[in-house]
Length: 338
Image (cartoon, rainbow, N blue to C red; front, side, top):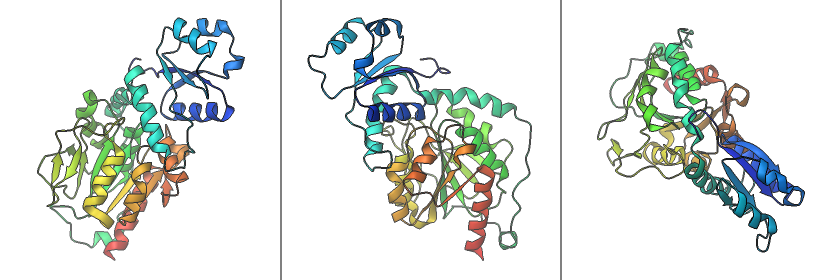
């Protein structure tokens, strides 16, 4: 699969429910479904004419099934047998099922998140400078804070995320009493472009994570793609020698756990456009710690699956477009200062 082309998946499943669930999961994670068929309705010539990057087979019984034998013999693409019946997307077991399936797909046919990198070029050429949200009196009259941030929010994004995060930061006035960590699903070869692409018109300093340093007011720290970002006991950032848990890099679930553990009720999460359900598994923990979770409205997303999963799970307490999310955060911080 090329960086700009979604992996083509052919699905064979023996129940209509499973075919529906698999199709929705594949589409929401950035793959293209080129065939979705009941094995009893699959004509032999389809096996020869269909040219997917991978066959995904999910049957109640595969033993002594002529179709499977013929598929293994004739298929030019890999054949992956299913992960078992998929749970409801709102179920607590769904993220685990999804991670297992898409970890395998990522290795076999490629990662759709690679399409994020080339989209940065358009942001680097963007000339428009939209107006910023007005600073309320409660914040305007407050002395500008500097130094180590005592409140940190996570900006979580995947496919379509850079444009949404840029719109959020462009609308957000500087000088707010908060710092950010930005976790973006992206190929590591484009990681260095992110700060300039999303921060060039904003009043925020977008920068790479620094080992053994703190998150500061006015900063947007870009979570590294290849190393897990955590925190030491004294609150300093720690860049681990190990990578993020698969299949996502960076793992938004893991970043939420690390953030909630360190900042508790002094943290929040804003989920922007993205594929899959990364973030859903850790959402309940963040809320138990006293943190807030907000999400971008579906109709304003290039890919709404990630924020939709948080909404469907009942985790998101506010939904809006990037500018509305910026305005809501300004109001939230103003209430804290009042």
